Image 1 (tube, rainbow, N blue to C red):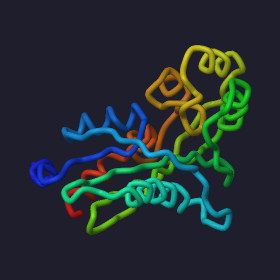
Image 2 (tube, one colour; image 1 turned 30 degrees about the vertical axis):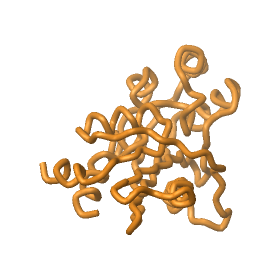
Image 3 (cartoon, rainbow, N blue to C red; image 1 turned 90 degrees about the vertical axis):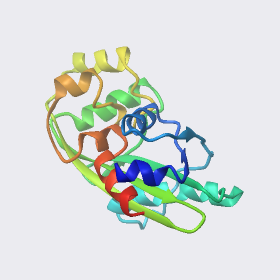
Length: 195
């Protein structure tokens, strides 16, 4: 458990309000506290889609740099985007937008990309992980049921793989399941071991 021993030298800060990220980091056996800094999630339109999540996670980490990082603090920030047909889907603003996003994902393959930034006073490192998700054709009743009974508003792409829709609508994935939840735990573990 070399990583856990190494991390004992740091106060780990998760710079995210996401309950999924908090849960996953806890399940990795890492002790941390949550501290969220507010900022706008804006990126240059000229940026390649594959670089957007990493860029946004770096921008989130810069909010910690501005106010200063303690000598032994390690900040983890992350951002997840959903891409279908070269279009980035954000979090829905309302029920109708959530339904429209799910209609767009229905019967298609989409990509979930999570960018993660590790930051200390001395160094910073960003990486991204991409997962392909295969959605079955969703009926209007299924879309309506999910949006009514679950929490699509706080999720990029208007769905959570760990919720009902993940059980009944996802035919398969190519890549990390936990990346789709919002934190690529395997890759994070590897990156922490050499950071």
